[in-house]
Amino acid sequence: MTGLLGVPRVRLGTFPTPLVAAPRLSAAAGVEIWFKRDDLTGLGLGGNKVRGLEYLLADARGRGCDVLVTGGAPQSNWAMLAALAGRTRGMDTVLVHFGHPVEPVGNLALAVSAGAQVRFTGDDDRGSVDRGVAAVAAELAAAGRTPYAMGRGGATGVGALGYVAAGLELAGQLQDTGLAPAQLWLATGSCGTHAGLRAAQAWLRPGYDVVGVTVSRPAAEAAQRVDRIAAEASDLIGTPRASAPPVVVDGFLGPAKGARSPEGEAAAALVARTEGVFLDPVFAAKAMAGLLAAARDGTAVGPVVFLVSGGAPTLFL
Ligand SMILES: Cc1ncc(COP(=O)(O)O)c(C=O)c1O
Image (spheres, rainbow, N blue to C red):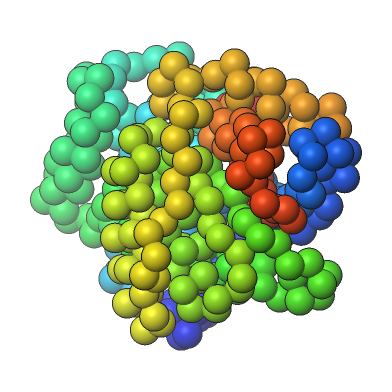
């Protein structure tokens, strides 16, 4: 099937995801908040990465590939969902994680149960994943396979198309509900999600600002990545590139990427108590901490749509 402007897409998720009001959270925060429930995208336990994988998998199939190679942290939501996505089309997946073998819990356990082959780089540097993915792809090619290598997070122009499509989906829902948000808040990690929403914004001019809370790198670096990947996505579909600088909020990373933070824990607990929605501890919880702080200091302008981006497998760790 084709997706955005004729670009090949496979169907992995169930869309549209709900856009719902969060009235009790809004009352507690002092700003009107709505949730875009991308924890309910429908593959595995859901999450934002399903959207990009629809375009990446179509690209892989179009190139005749028969095995996916990607990786990240052992608890990468991306890596687990990539393995599941491959399974739905009969493709094997090899995952490369940095560091040394760890207990298979959370996402790692789910990826293994879905049949992913897992390798560890033996090096705690995250960059070792990129080298490992390239090495595994070369090894598979030498063995006669046709690998499709994907970088961490699927953060490329093709991967970002999933969130350009999400921007289009949201535009329809805003029209149906009459909601006119001033801001769309999300967690910005590898930057593909933010980039797709930015490219959608440049194309559709929906009237809201996209605000990303960086949860894995300094804000200036995240903004640069978002800008570059968004431009790649816009070019792929021939829509206008964004010109204003991306908005990236710093200060909510906590002790480290992938580690819980006290502010994130408090924000997630508030959301669970007021709305019965669970935010994962290392992406959406930290983004919500950023939104709540901005609501307190008056920089969050409502109504706000907040992207609930999934990550359920890490709730129990
Ligand atoms: C649950 C969850 N939310 C948000 C993000 C951030 O998305 P991106 O990496 O596209 O910036 C991720 C990335 O892995 C994620 O797993």
